[in-house]
Length: 320
Image (tube, rainbow, N blue to C red; front, side, top):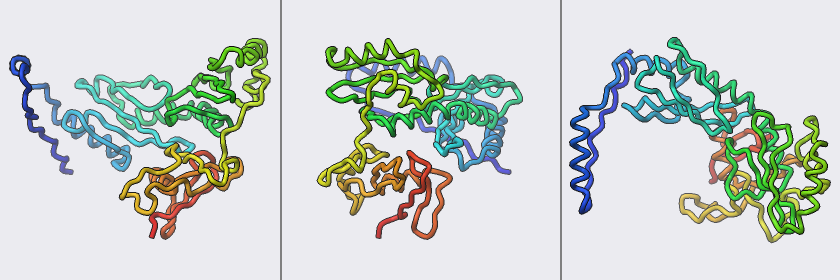
């Protein structure tokens, strides 16, 4: 099989600003003195291409770095259908030297590597690591669905904290241990001291009551001896108001000609699962379903699972 040709790079040119000429010349002299960067042997490329073939080219999201193969990003789907991007960087000493990895997870696994190891072994070890994190993500999902989360940024799979609203301008900043997600979380109270005194006292007094067999939100309410407010749901929104989208976290889509009839529109799709009832922009839901490998298409409709619950959702491929 003929191997893909490696990419050649043209040297970048730029206009130096006044005062930078001496620095630029010195840098060029240093580079020339050091000689050209070391080049990998031809066997490296043939080996990497063969290893990607084992994993599947359809799982490659990007390839960059030294001649386009020293930094590879693969799409990995866990057992709950969550999509993860695993970046694998191959050092100059590869395969004698182990690759390094990066991903949006709360902590990375320690990759076991030997001279006979291959990239597929890294993928398999990462998939095993994802299995260990399922309980953690299930609890974080529970927090997002049941409690009033007010974090300004959209949560990522690496985030182990949540900011919860308690009402009356009082908040709790929680940190869940990814390795022991069912255990008592770290907790910091934010707000006026006078309003938080009772909650802080209850937390210190009742924290030993935390039961790892109970649901997280029930544990938290029991320790605080406080009815935790639920998130604003679709059903509680007034007729003249709209709910935020569960994917882009915005009420209205941006005004953009590329969105066509959806430009500037509010949420227009609601999950039919009573325990979810999340609102979405159909455009956002459509894009999300397209990114999931388990999504099915029948005629002009995409069928898949809700991003928050396992219930079915369906949305048209395009508007006519």
